[in-house]
Image 1 (tube, rainbow, N blue to C red):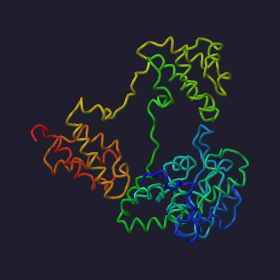
Image 2: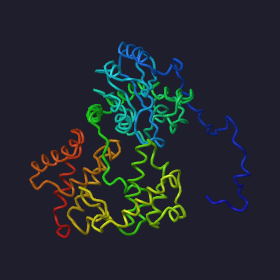
Image 3: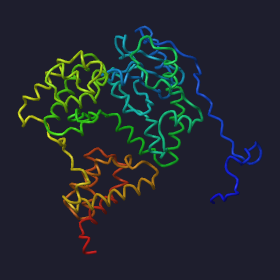
Image 4: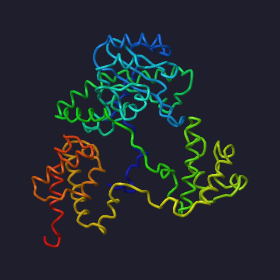
Length: 433
């Protein structure tokens, strides 16, 4: 209702007093604390043997986390590994000075690992010889259960009613020695993972999604990070470049920067920011002086590696047109769906009907649509569906095609009927309706 001239303004309203019906803000959840205090960092082979004996003699699953130096280092290596198991307490392992982590792998053999966002940590753990035989991913469990936010701190507060500190999440974990507050933060990341896992496992059972989770967790055991094709195209601002030679310059500068970053184990952006690559690729300076005078060309390595950048640009100037990159990236998948209506109207109808069905199914089962079926799988299937149109044979072929992409059995069981309907329905000419 609009205020009239004589209506009281918000400033004139009396303040709500306790007990007069006002809603009071809920107090914050209690802060999560270490139950057993902060352990010493394991940084010798003798200390590792002690940790392995304790973990091997403990019971139940083991909570595991790893800290990397993302944003500081080129590599994805683990600079700290945290473990907690019932009966063994928490152990903080520094893998850098240790001879080998084989004893730790042996101590954990046959034990379920609990990780949060496992795809982030599995590669760096595998790099030091730590590979699970079974796992439980609390982030993925949260997605399957339909939680709107699945960050560890949010889940711990929502499910367990405790609040976590997150102030050191972007720290440079390659720092030595590691400050005590950082170590406390790291230890807290595994403090209640076991309890969180137990609560979420019970919820999965109750929701009838325990088998879905088992298939997803088994699938994660073979996870390998995707190898990016033409990774240089992800340079921020590269889309603004015009002409293949400018794109070639961006590629050459990116590759030169990447080689330096790998050799020095420094994140590439700390040597030369993406914005500097784009301005240099646009201006195409011919010598060190003009390069360093180019507005926007800056960074720690701008001057130090100036000759490298100039040489890269010179190679591009001399490069035959046929060797320059194309405007659009090469790919083995279907074109973007926004082009389907003009190129393949039937495929466009298939895709739109299938996408609507996936959104409806995801809502019914209370999970994100991308967890119901990987979007790329849907695009590939709708662009090149099986040839048969006999319903039963088509359903079998759809299941087989999705499985070849990597879809799990629980996913194909849920979506096949809807996708068969989308394929058959799209074949009918809309004008015949």
